[in-house]
Length: 208
Image (cartoon, rainbow, N blue to C red; front, top):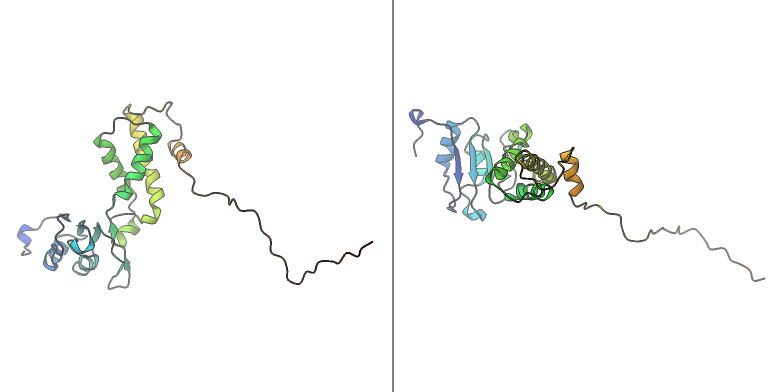
């Protein structure tokens, strides 16, 4: 592949062919020349089949790449010392929120637009901080926040298009969704226990 200003275009590299190393250093460097923030999707699993590693993507684009992969990759330290966080393109970002919205609104006809809305809702959650750290996705630690935002978009669209079977439409969509969610926090079922101070002595009771 030869980089040429005559053929310069803006594009993203997306791979899902399970050909390890398909995105060569030359291809990645060209991506860096074509784009200020080259977008690299190396989506093949397992890691050995990934089109490139996160380190490959960052190091060959002067640490400017926005990277996502199918397999998890460790953080990468950029030349300026900043930690770059590879995003993982996993359906775990989408299906919990999509399913939650479907259940909450009682959607029977699940059309493609719900999938598109879910993807758009997730994209809206990508922050400048995520982009500054080279990631195309929010931190997976924020998955509950992502799921609620996606479910909210799904539920609202369901009522707008008449596909919701749960009536009436809730006045506060987010509060309605949160009320349906399983609460993983619970009170301990164990009886309360108390420590006994070592220097405390039990008084002796003299017989009458």
